[in-house]
Figure: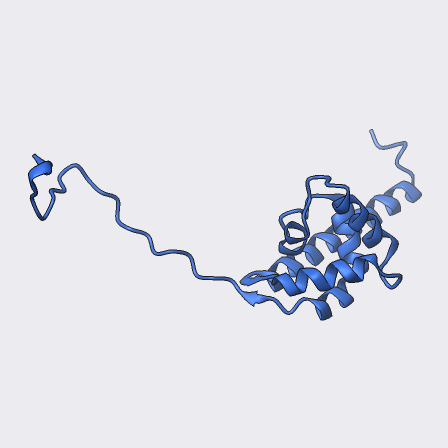
Length: 133
């Protein structure tokens, strides 16, 4: 039954669906841009200074206050996208995206350590010493 769904309600639903899809695209784009780059200590310092300045958006200043109070978030988590589930983080990143792109140059993330093959029970020591028996 859709009698209560007036044309205004349907238009609002369409607008909301489009806005959510746009935010999802923007977040995916931001994650892809940062993938492979780790924010350097200098990048984090620059972002912290910006967040405390008058040039930052109100959302960014609220985020800086929250991080300073020790709310379980760090700037590294914010800048790497680990905290992208948080609404305030998303709002702050979206509001100051252009300025953050200027501030964060990043550094190449170190390659993952090589994986060693798992040892099986059939592996025997190649050298025998007195304490191996």
